Length: 266
Image (cartoon, one colour):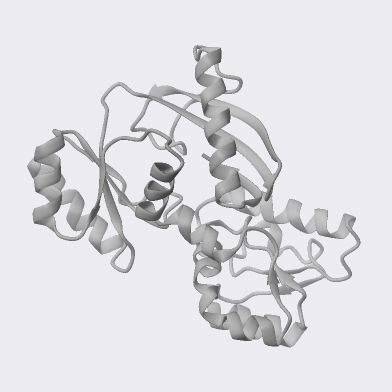
């Protein structure tokens, strides 16, 4: 996406280099942002300066007779496409094509807030009280029952768009209007938000079975500041060893349950 998420450009370029090191004959990039390194003429073997839509990507795949598609380094648009590609399963079989990495249905399970929260319940991983939003009245009732503040989280967003903490009924109503405008076709989850909570992330990679956790990241600010705006410390400075052990255990369970193949963040 133009003007945002330069880290995915870095990831895409490194993915291209990695494919070439593995001996891939032709690594093709699809990107319509002229300001990125990944659209430089000498980075990929072939560049398609086209929109990232399902129809356009599959047209290119069929034309090039591609063996597979990598979506894990493409940012939110690529992730959304992977989840939608399940509709094209017959086409994938016809052209003998695979998504190289995590399966689209598993990406959907991670991106869909309600499905992911259900997964945590199945794994018996503790989480704040939550409910899938179906209408404003139910959301307002949930907030009243659990107490403010609450966190409203649209699905399928990496940049924190429309994710807001609401401290009273008025701000919750405003947030629900924004969330619906940004994510009309995807579920929105409302969660009890704990003021003063610590925010900690785990970055890792998984091959579907084995999990390697590269870093535990401690946010200096309390929870509520998006990671793109936060100050962070690697390794964590004030987190106890027992908490780090719990984070690593939960991270491994989540990665294995989702059958992740590639990089991930929790």
